[in-house]
Image (cartoon, rainbow, N blue to C red; front, side):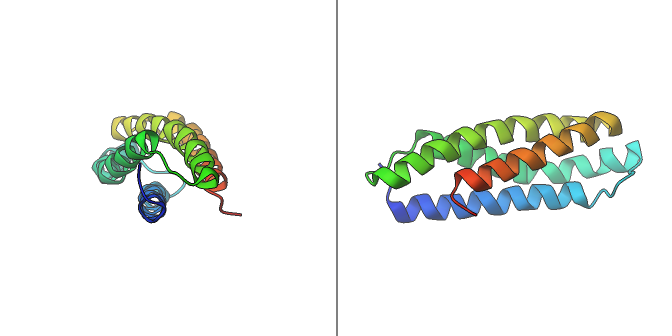
Length: 122
């Protein structure tokens, strides 16, 4: 069991790591060269690792508060999908594969939005 306070702190830290990842992606602009992408790849690793760690933590956590527990379960499921997409996107960026990275960026943004909704943000 974790406290409600710890759950909310972990959720806020997760949101920050997702924002950091998305900021790195957005910094590439709309038409990065393969070399620019490969150079940006390592910058994605830290926010990806942090998000992945929180995904494991939130997935394993349980709360006594029924409302927050339901929210945690929804958030953990959404976060699992987001982390999977972030991992794939990071690989495409590190490979300099602009076409596949661009397509997956849309999925990551959609999954980040689904996570935001699952976490209870309007």
